[in-house]
Length: 280
Image (cartoon, rainbow, N blue to C red; front, side, top):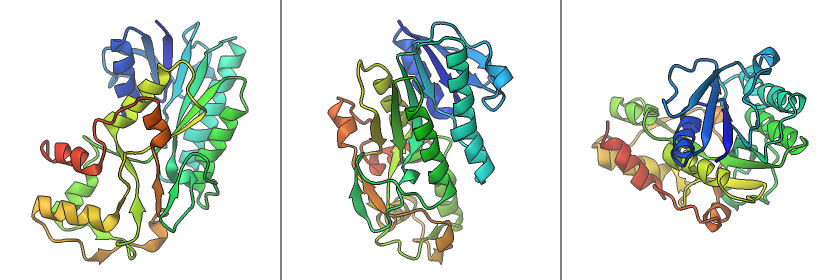
């Protein structure tokens, strides 16, 4: 049994926490509002951006998962979530003499700036051109420089129950496509697999320092939208989105994650979105 703290315990963190608690571990979820946490997770109401809130962490922590996400789309929100909050938590762990065997950090494929559809893996260069990727990468480096062993899980776009925006826009006729939609590759992961991979890495004896958390089929935006249009019985979007708001085009490999023995519940968008459409 391991005493586990999930800091910034939102959607993915909660799912992982329930899995870990079911396996017999003591799990605490740290977030500002704890009323939404599942009953399997012990609650710790705290704000990661307030060092005073972190003075009384559970003692003898064996593992820490940092799963905070930005509360907005602006630079300040990203800095609070991926840099300031992480820095405060690491300082609190050191100050309290905590010695977790590992800290696992949920990062993002936004750290990659490639825009030519290239295949990427954990060894590919990270040179993000936007503040989103830059601040997430700053958080990765902050953790790597800490006194704790660490693992980073770079997640693709998370979808699943409660994340129905694209489906609703398609149904209402408000969806848009990018100008290069036929060649623009996207990478995603169902929230159940994001949480499953996180819990899986948490229970490994010696995970590597970095994994890509994406499903097994990067797909073009065109293939995705055409599949949806057929399933929903709606037209393929003809409105074009602002190119300035689009992320890069790349194809991320999940071979290292698969090599650990993790098996995806939803290996591609087809299985994942089919299950989601049955619920909506």
